[in-house]
Amino acid sequence: QVQLVESGGGLVQAGGSLRLSCAASGSISGINAMGWYRQAPGKQRELVCTITRGGIPNYADSVKGRFTSSRDNGKNSVYLQMNSLKPEDTAVYYCNAQEAYYWTTRHYWGQGTQVTVSS
Image (cartoon, rainbow, N blue to C red; front, side, top):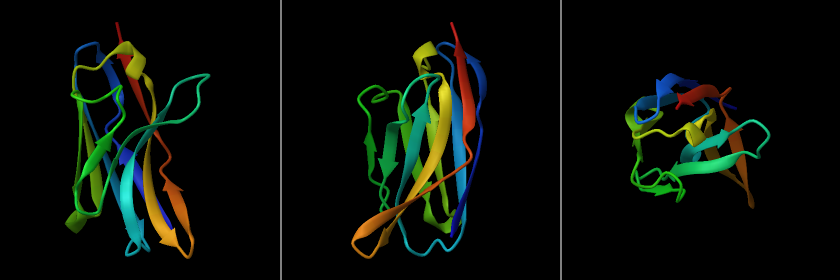
């Protein structure tokens, strides 16, 4: 099992910045990609970004140019720097880790951290 713990959410004004952190523990040797998803009230959970074990990120179009993800394999952690935040970025942000398991992929999730952007 893999445990993920997020931190860094909060309330910020539009145009501001926040940095989210996610630390993984447990059986982490099999983790490949990690990333961030978010879920706004009344909406489905959506991808924000993923980052490979080698540190190559892939971003949703809605956050490109504003969000930057990084990964520290030595600390088993992944980060999300969010700049130029907009009210539509308001959501619960979830850390995600993926593990290859036979012919499929296991997903692990953190408990989520609230990000609220006021206009």
